[in-house]
Image (cartoon, rainbow, N blue to C red; front, side):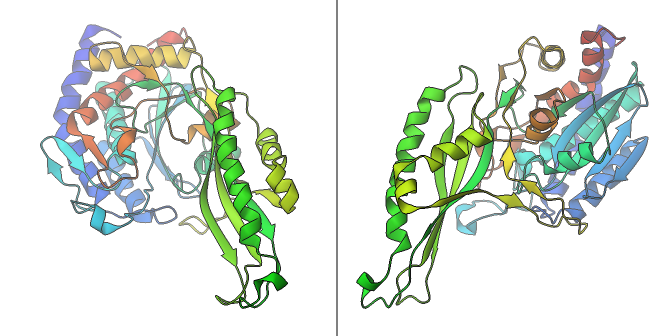
Length: 408
């Protein structure tokens, strides 16, 4: 890309920064937890119309997709629009739905995770529109739904139902303006023990399912330590932890007749669904208890009313550093930042579990904000991240075409 166009991108990113700030603050002010994104989707639609997008559509699941350009190469820039909830309000020092701007930082639920990505990507596309598409590509900015509930489900729908068939995807989750090329996968399992209820005054007459579960919980903690042997040089180790425990009984004056724990299993490179399940089934405590191990299903209606069932298995993905998408990302980021970016990985999971992990679509990450603040009461994004991220999104399509040998 010529120096003149790069300077024009930087100039327009600066000009549009106040608009990005306003847009982000207004999205934050609209509560939009998973399956409740309708109002924020409509706000995004209005901003796309204002920016002069060539096409805007909302698919059956409720994802919004806006297009700039009509060339052959299809480039998608994805931002999920749903957020997690507030949690305990007493832990917040600011109103989570005001979008407070203080000392160059925007605060609020969804500020970094990850409505800032939508604000910057939409205006990156607007910059391309203003300057004129200078290559054989089309850019789609996608505002996707239900990621916090079931990451990748939105893209399973987009790709399986042929809503869009991209050649490359940029995930705009927070990366502190680094270029990310992978992250661990994950899956959700339940382990269940069966007991036999009896009156609590004579517990020896029954079989307490919680007591059967206790050694399983301890052995799962030990399994997590042993998983260090599976560490990948780039992605790190797999992990497993208990995130929930519950039991049933006829009353609080009775022995528990069932107990269930929920497992959050993170998968590093080389680990599989089958292997992760087999590890739990092979634990001595699980076999002695006759416990069952189940990979969970997800089947919740979206805000449109559509249910699109899936297993709660989200594959690991990683691209090599010399992959054209990564190389293009580094080129675009160097232009946007004025120096080479940090190339790294996410600690958490994103929609790339579907785009790259399930469907093999080359995917990279670049986003404003820091994942360290995700889901916490200090969710935030610096204003200057919006500016520099918009420069990246405006520069990436030409960088990708050039890397692939096309004109850009």
